[in-house]
Each structure stands twice: as C-alpha cells, then as structure tokens.
Amino acid sequence: QKEVEQNSGPLSVPEGAIASLNCTYSDRGSQSFFWYRQYSGKSPELIMSIYSNGDKEDGRFTAQLNKASQYVSLLIRDSQPSDSATYLCAVNRVPGNQFYFGTGTSLTVIP
Amino acid sequence: ETGVTQSPTHLIKTRGQQVTLRCSSQSGHNTVSWYQQALGQGPQFIFQYYREEENGRGNFPPRFSGLQFPNYSSELNVNALELDDSALYLCASSLAGTGDETQYFGPGTRLLVL
Image (cartoon, rainbow over all chains, first blue to last red; front, side):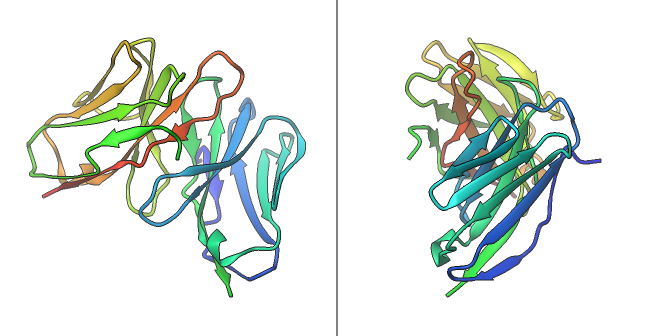
C-alpha cells in the first residue's frame, strides 16, 4: 500500500466551477498535511498546510482533513485557467522529517 | 519565489560519471531535504540534513550522498550515474523545532544521464 494516494486524473472543470481534489494516507499517526501545486517543468509551490481536523480556508482554496478516515481534500472555488497544474498531496509522519508525496492529480480548467 | 536556490538548473552526464548538485536554503532555515522526481511521479525523499548531520534517509543506495555546511547550504552527490537517475532533483528547506513543518522548494536541477 502506498503511503499517500491520489487520483491521477486528469480532472477537467469549466472556468468558475469548483474543483475537488482528494488524497488518502496510510499511516494513522501522520500529523501534518500539505497541498502543493506544480506547473509543468517547475518545482512544487505550497498552497496550504493543515494540521487539525476540519476545514481551513485561504482565499479560493479550502483544505479539509479527516484523520479518522485518513483523508485530505482540497477544494478550489471559482477555478481559473491559471489553476491548471498538477496538485501534490504531501504527508509528514514525523515532525521535521521527510514528506511522503502522492503522484499528483492533473487539473485542467477549461475557459 | 521561496528564497531557496539550486545550481545548476540543467545538467547532462553520461552513465558512470559523478555529479554534485548544490542548494542554498531560505534565510533562517536550518534543515535541507533532497527529493528525486521522475517524470509523472511525485517527489521521492532521498535524505535530510539538520545541523550538518544526516537526519533521515529514503530508499536510495549509498552512491547518493550529501553534505550540509555551517551556513545550512547543502550538496547532493551521486556517484556511478545510471540512466534511471535522470530526473528533477529538488531541494527543500525548512525550520525545525518551530511546529511549522512546511518545506519550501527550490527551482530544481534537471539531470539527464545518457
């Protein structure tokens, strides 16, 4: 079983719609969770982190964490063509140590 | 821009050669992690350095080695290059001990092994 699993997509949504990205992780002791966005040929850039159960909102982005279900999600409201990228879910099992990444979900926002 | 820099940006080597990649961490950060990202995959953890000591290692052979310097910059060395080593190598810096575990990535070094 992989540490972190994501639906590789591709996921296509029309401009202005809500994009929903999902991630599951295998280690119930995982403590911190991150969403990164990666444009083709570029390095990952942080969208947001979440440490506690529930929702965390930052602008058009909302991260949701459910530790009981070992599930993390990212919602992108009012999707824009510039949101078209690969979204990586990362999990940190031990504070200060390595991140485990999923393979990423490719998102295309259609104008 | 994260403030993490890497050099070189691109590199072409032949099988069997050795390569050194460099990373300067974001100002104030004390921890550097290295990742390998193959095409279409998520980053895979190679190792991490904290206070000039290796602080964790992923499933990579010993020919992958590293260093961290007193100014927290770091090097990744790969000996006896293989074709499968062709990938994007990412350096990430963070600040240990603050409760914020976020890792900030540099632009990466794209290595091609022929």
